[in-house]
Length: 145
Image (cartoon, rainbow, N blue to C red; front, side, top):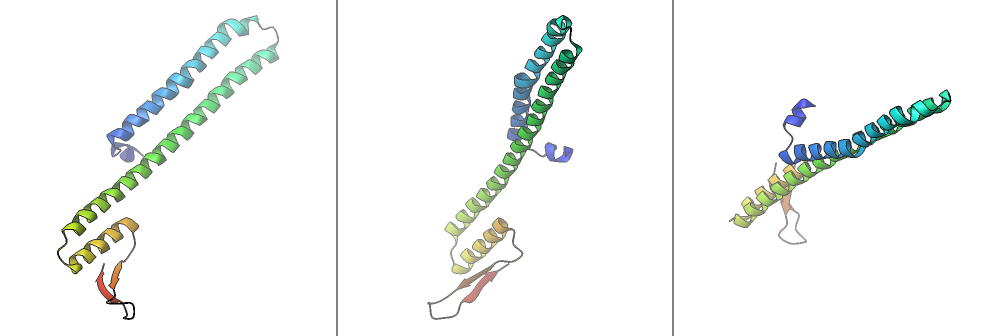
């Protein structure tokens, strides 16, 4: 996990810090304040031991739910960022292919670029480009990888 975090983009690291800070300020600080108020003002005034235990259990369960929500939010954020990185790599590949196709001088050069791009985008084992002179003729292999 440490190697993955080191290679994370600056945007990803910044978003992770923002999520952590928002969680801390929005959930941890109020929960600590609630626990403080309960311990110093509410618990001393309660005479029933069962009510005291119930109040403590309530604060602990709120903390557990809040922590679980944080982990779900963090996992969702990381998955979304990973998907964005994959999409950005695919878009970069398409932009490179588009530039190469625009500059292609010959049919074979365009086919080689298209095959190379298709291989990158689909993560396939092999890619073939076929052409036909007309609808009645069989396709001929133009390029493959």
